[in-house]
Image (cartoon, rainbow, N blue to C red; front, side, top):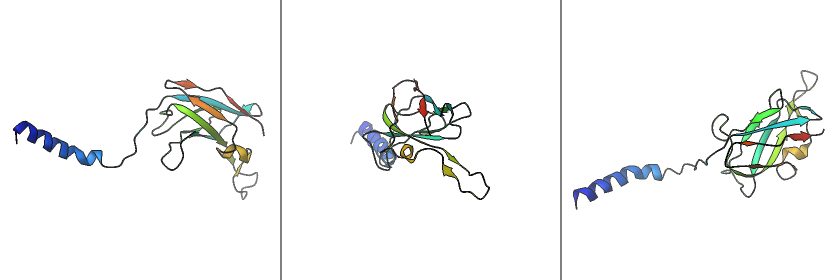
Length: 140
């Protein structure tokens, strides 16, 4: 065996555990911002989740964001505000708030239809570039 071949063989064997770890592939992400209003007012504290169309199961990445006081959100997939993979999505929105009394359990203040990707009418397309989405204008 030549010394060069032996070096390549040892290097290949050393890298094999990294290749066989079974880690999920991290898809490239692109900055995504948007806005959510309910009856014309910012949907502060709502959670938006992007469900990729054509992908399902536990391994499907689901970018998400929290709506701020001005109604805006920024998506996160892996790390804080890293955006979302390019593609087509069904979007769900939930707004869980406590009741008027301290013993009232939190409740979703939006239509239950918006909480499921199967029944939500909201969609979005993320480009392979920074994307600013059209506002989601919801009604109660």
